[in-house]
Image (cartoon, rainbow, N blue to C red; front, top):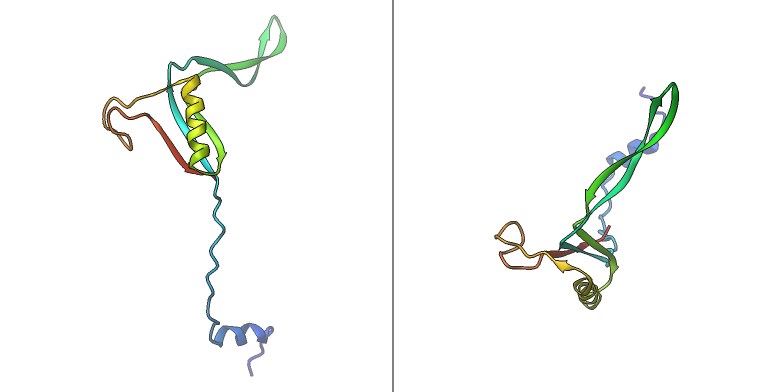
Length: 119
C-alpha cells in the first residue's frame, strides 16, 4: 500500500484547474521627459576615496572624475500639458540639441527629446 504524507497535494494535482481570471496590473501613469542639450559644461564629481601614503603617513583622498552632463530628465509628469510646460521651461534655460543626421529615433533637423513610462 502506498502511503502519502500529504494527500491534499495529490488531490489538487489531479483535479481540473479552475478558470484563470486575468487581472491586469495597474499601470503607472507617470511619464519621464528626457532632453539632450548642447553647450553642456564638464563638472567634477567625487566617485570615492583612496588611501595615499605621504612621508610615512596615510591620508584619505577623494577620487574625482570629470563628467559631461548633456541630458536633463524631468520625472513624475502626468499628461501632455505637463510635458509641454516642462519642455518650454527647459527651452527657456537651455538649448535643445538638434539631430544632424537621421539616426535612431530622430530624423535630421529634429530636436532631441523623448518621453517614456516611468518605473
